[in-house]
Image (cartoon, rainbow, N blue to C red; front, side):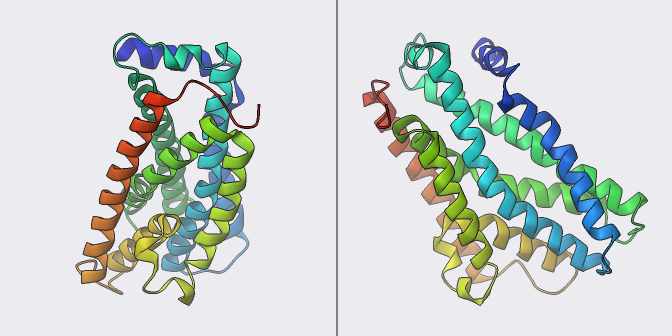
Length: 248
């Protein structure tokens, strides 16, 4: 497992995929700092706004990095390396997905933790603990595993343009799910999970709402069940896939 992950790292080392994960989180911190430096939001509004904007942006970025990852495999040997890993064939998609998730978790922790530090020591919000940003970032990340699976599959099967187009539409859906249009239905919409879960978490932190609600329990169950089912669907598809992409 370690050797296969190292192979993924080597393939991605000098690509836009790696540069995006290394530098975009720090750019995000600067952008959020700039936004809140020139605005007059309260401490809680800054945290709400941070996770809302991050959720919308992350939805799009997931589709972009999945498209990049698939393209790396295509350039490295037209998916031969992915399809011919020793042992079970599905191991290829496991490793690819795991590498994407590790990279994404790193990026989320950097931008969440980094802005948490900026919020506390530069913007002067000493009432909000750094842990709020870290936990919120972790919630956001795990809520998006479904989208990693979906976009990786779309990138491999139909090409990166389809995945990125889906990500653009998904970002718009994420934005709409923040409004009253999402009430009641967000539970069943994967693009809404991250923004709604983090929103409810922050509301709980500031004492505006409880997370122990029937809606939240149902949403967590739907999220876990849907992600698990998609994982097995993708696994079954990948076993039969021969490296053909419909845009070729």
